[in-house]
Amino acid sequence: MKELKAVLVNGSPHEKGCTYTALCEVEKELNRNGISTEIFWVGNKPITGCIGCGACVKLGQCFSEDTVNEFAELAKNADGFVFGSPVHYASMGGAITSFMDRAFYSGGAFLRGKPAASVVSCRRGGASATFDQMNKYFTINSMPIVSSNYWNQVHGNSPEEVLQDEEGLQTMRMLGTNMAWLLKCIEQGAENGIAFPTPEPKIRTNFIR
Image 1: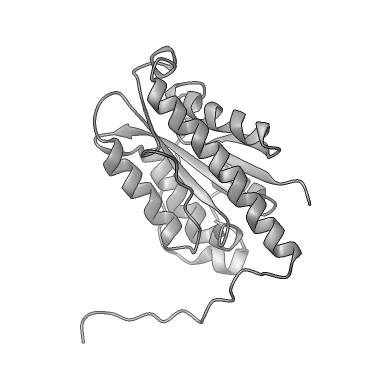
Image 2: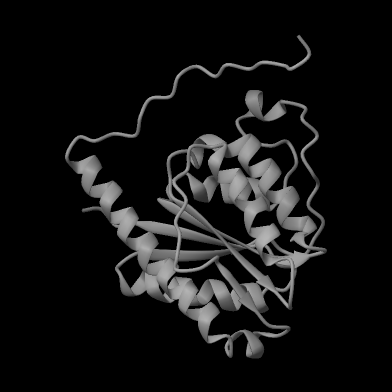
């Protein structure tokens, strides 16, 4: 079996904050189960939103040079993904929202068919709404969603407080274990000739007639 790799995307403006702490817990279980990992930080510089220009179709990548294109290159050889976001106003942070909009629009082909999960960090409320928002990116791109024993969320206003969230940390550990299992199952299937289904040509309709 080939070496399997998961990329964990830290969508917080704080490189080593609460979201990072949650991702590290997932990472430990992935590593313990033989999955190599890399934590990719989107950074704290402005990330422009997608303008729907379609330039990525011609160029093979987004015309805007920032961490989105760096991630797309990394995604080509990755087998699974975990996207993490803090909760801002009961939704994803602005940077990771713009990041995922463009990453999935311009680089969705590198993500399609690969397992993914979302991880949410919040002080108190808004976690389930953010969790739902993040998962929509996966379902529109034919990506199996990896689950745990609860919604993938941790609570705390600092990394130290997150480490006191015993239930949240267990949720992260089980998420890592489940993702490792699914990655191995998919690879084992591929070795036995079970390929990812060939998609039908996309049908697009408008609801005006």
